[in-house]
Image (tube, rainbow, N blue to C red):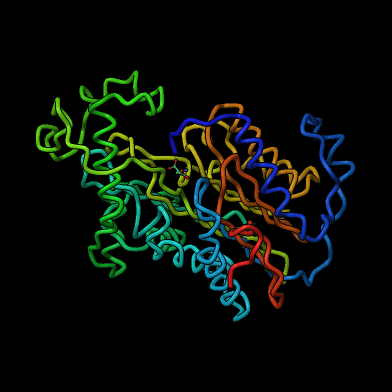
Length: 381
Ligand code: ASP
C-alpha cells in the first residue's frame, strides 16, 4: 500500500513481530548472514531436509498494516487450511481454503472488502496459488467475483498460468461463479476520502502520486467529471484511513510438500488495469522443496525485488524461515516500500513486517498459536 513510513517505526514493528516468534520451535536450518550471497559455499553447508513424516502446519497473514486484533480472522484461515490437510486434501486446496476465509471477511482487503478505486466504483482483484512441485496459476485485475483465489485455483487446471481482466472474469462465469460486487460501504467511504485527498493534493499522499498527472491519464469508465475528482471545493465526507492489505496462507504437509495462496484488492490509488505483485511469478509468493512464502505490501517494490523467489533461494541456501522473513522485509524497506511476509519451512514458520500485521500459525494437532498478541498480551479467545 502506498503510504509513508518512518524507518524507525518500521524497525520497531519488525522487532515486535520477531519477538512474537519467540514461542516458535527453533529452526532446523543453518542461521544466515544477511550479506551472504556465495551460493556455492552456502549450499555446501545446507543440511538435508528432515525425513518425513513432517508436522502439517499452516500460517496466514491479514496484510501489512492490518490491526493485530484481527488475528482471529487469520486463525480461522489457518484452521480451514489445516482441516483440508487433515482430510488428506491437496495442499493447494488447503491454502486456497484458508484464503477464502479471509476473502469472505470484510475486514481484509481481498474478496469482499477489497479496495475501491479512485473512480469510487471499480474493484479489481488479483490472486495466485503455487505448490512445491512448481505448479503456479493466477488471475489479475479480475472483477465482480466473490473469491478470486478460487478462480486462480481453477486456472491451475488449464494450459495457462495467468488469466487477466475481462477474460479472467468470463472464465469465472464458466465455473458457475455469479456476478458479485465485493465493494463494502466502508471501502466506498474510504475511496471518497481518497478522492478528497487527491483533489487537495494532500501532502500525506505518496510522493509518486503527488508528482503524477493522474487527471491526464485517468482511464476509468466513469467520466472524471462524474466522480467529482475535478471539483475545486471538495466535500469532506469521510476520514482518510489506512486499509489493510493482501491476505495469504502457506501450508506444509505430512509428506513433505508446501503450497501457498494470495489474494488482494490491490491498492486504492491506481489507474484502471494496475496489477501488483500477487499474480506475478516469483514476486508475491513462491513455493519450493524447502518452504513457501507469501508477501504483502507495496506491489511495485515487491516485484522489483523478485521477493518471493529470493526468499526461496535463501531457504535453499539453508536460511531459516525466521531469517528469510527478516531479510525479505529489509530488502523492500530499502526500496522505501511497506512490506510483510510469512515463511514456512519443514520445521518452523515465521512472519516479519515493517508495520503491525495480523498473522497466525500453528501445527496440526497443537493449540500453540504463533502470532502477535493483541490487547496488551491477552491472547484472543
Ligand atoms: N501487494 C498488494 C499489491 O500491491 C497489496 C498489498 O499487499 O498492499 O497489489
